[in-house]
Length: 296
Picture 1 (cartoon, rainbow, N blue to C red):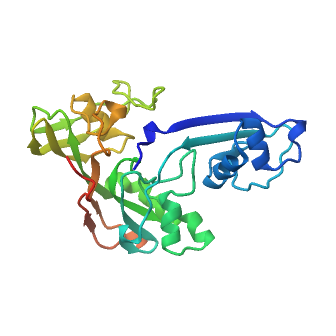
Picture 2 (picture 1 turned 120 degrees about the vertical axis):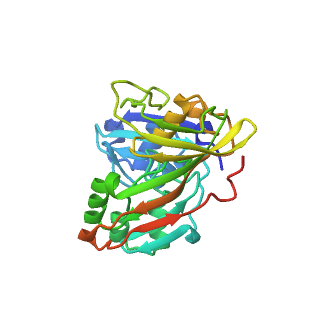
Picture 3 (picture 1 turned 45 degrees about the vertical axis):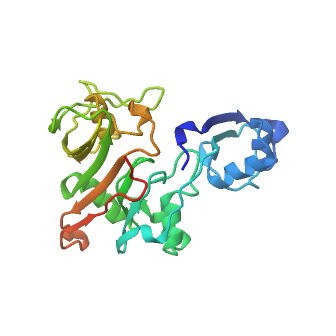
């Protein structure tokens, strides 16, 4: 798997003029943004091209004078394909998978093709209409592996997301370096809402309240395996909290971690309480240990 941070990211923009009026989208993207026709078509097919701020995957779409074009590209990226054995459990319209490190949990700016919603829909042989309804209930970062729940019902999706904090509990594993001096830690550092230029969030007294429980499970030299239980669900919460304590996650270069073959963060356990409104009448719980790429 390639490291996405090492790939060449481009965000190209232009406005069509009278010279491009009536031109095909793939031709206009190539001409205005300095791409080859082949690369232009691939970007459109992957979902990285936007016409007037909307994703457009129709290469033959005709351009008009003044149309805004945008192409978001991430070259040399190698996707980790989804396989049927990643489907851990299903009770339609709910589907639980074991996400692998390097798989996109949802659409990204530069792609809609090759993401888990698209690949899972294919594996389930969904119709186009069914596929359009398949969405992640919660999210995992690109480099994070582990249990991830999807819903193909919009009403149930909304209900689960609204009640996720009260009805679901999760447990993660992380390998950190250096190992912390403490054995357990209750972390309540607030996290700011704005990213910096490198896409990082930061600890801030004026930020949103966050809560994480951490406990060392095993030590190996200057590294430690830690169990993490988040009680809030802020973006990058576990990564930020551990980095703030001086023990960043191995492979998390964005937050100061050392280079590794993958981000060593794994969503190991998930439990959902009964929700009688939507036929979830019993408590559901799963445990999915890391796979063979979990080496430290």
